[in-house]
Image (cartoon, rainbow, N blue to C red):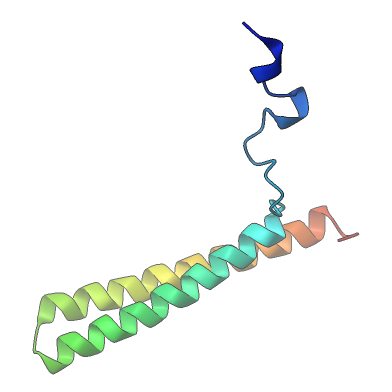
Length: 88
C-alpha cells in the first residue's frame, strides 16, 4: 500500500476538519438546533389547531419539548466547557 494515501497520525480523527469541536461550540450548535425545533414545533402545533388535527398538535408539542431538551443540553455542554477550559 502506498504511504501517500494514508492519513497522517494527526488527521486520523475525522473531527480535524477546521471546525471548533470543543464542548462550548457543540453546545452552541445544540442550543441553536433546540431553538429551531421549538419554533418548528410551535408552527406544527398551531397548524394542527387551525386544521383541527390532534395528532399534528401532539407532534408539535413533542417537537417543542425535544427542542427545550436540546437547548438545555447545549447549556450544559457550554458550562462544562467553561469549567474544563477556563482559558477559552
